[in-house]
Image 1 (cartoon, rainbow, N blue to C red):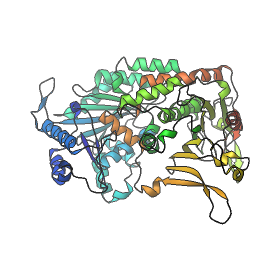
Image 2 (image 1 turned 90 degrees about the horizontal axis):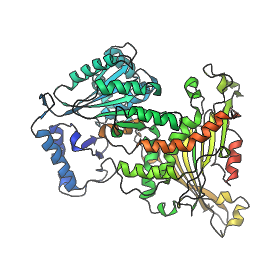
Image 3 (image 1 turned 30 degrees about the vertical axis):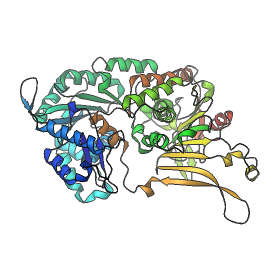
Image 4 (image 1 turned 120 degrees about the horizontal axis):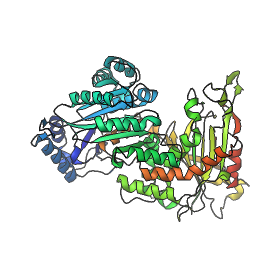
Length: 576
């Protein structure tokens, strides 16, 4: 069990197997035990003091006391011995970021690890190693990543001290991604830092997918933990279609078990996506309405107000469907539509997601619209088109926009259209889920809405980013002597309700990987089911060389997306 001490009054708990118990010091355990006698006695904690495990279950006093006792007894028990008979005091976690000089590592992974350290969420004993082909010293790595580290807004006073402490735990190993000799050198450095402790190792593959297998092979043979656990986080894309994805999975499983592979989709770590199951399963007002009986359509919208911005070469190999729809949006859809899981255990949740994906109709070309942004001048400023990017072929047919209508053939969602839309260089940046409910039968006030019954439709909007919010659109009477109706929003604006800075998705996912919590990571059969939906239409688009509909940079996208929605009697949510 790990206690994650945060700056507010709340304390979050997460559980993991006793085999890999966390390494908080005895002194901290005892200090916490003595400072919280009301918890162990079973009395109600003070206001704002919440105790949870990583699945959101509250811990009662009995289970808490048992868990603490287990950790104390484990730490104070006889010292463990490794295979060579040397003594081991506690455990340590070594986090190796492969591809440490890349943008993802610098902008997301290192800052996320520092944020976890800043909040005292990492184990007491941990080390961070960067591994890449670039020739860097430890100090050069520290200088590079220090430029991207930031502190929480509400705890700035000790920022520099914490930053320096974190950087002193960061080290670098230069090497080729397919060099077993270089991974032997990495292993030697890891052993030096792990000396005397049970070694647990986490590898984050922040590298192109074509070298995943080389790295996993070398790390598995020469840099895996001899006595503790070894886990590998794999970034998308997980292949380009069903065949390449299956081949990647087969190759990885030559060296790793499924339980060692953590396929990351950072959208699953976003606060509002994680809140989906809470919103639905813990609020009686929503759960009975979550079906075809009351919901008319569901929209999953992703838009960016910028183009490929130097990523054109990478993006042109995949396109918007592979980059966004097949993973981010489809994962959100599965979480939204799944049946109530048996428990909040990772396997129970992932089982229900797989059932949803396997119940979906294979996507047809008639239910897909693709587009590509073109150059546009607005306000005296010129914006380049997709093919103006020097890394993109001039004749490229790769879509930068796609809209699709999907259906789930089960009792709950039969004939309810799930509309997805994703695009680059659109008029706004946002990601949201819009749930449009059915019209009120025999509405007494239909004359007040005229012929546009959509104005009378209730709509639940979950805004994932930016400005996280949940709001419900309802019909309301405007104050006054006449009967005039208006659409109003019942708002939960996160910035107003929860002024504390929201953790980045990578923070949550990295912490879960360290803890061995898999519910926000993608299982191999989940991946197979997701690719089975999109592979046929992707192959048809490429085989038939379907030309994408052009749309101006900064517009709302192709007109064809509105025709697709109208085909199923749907109107895209406002500002879409």
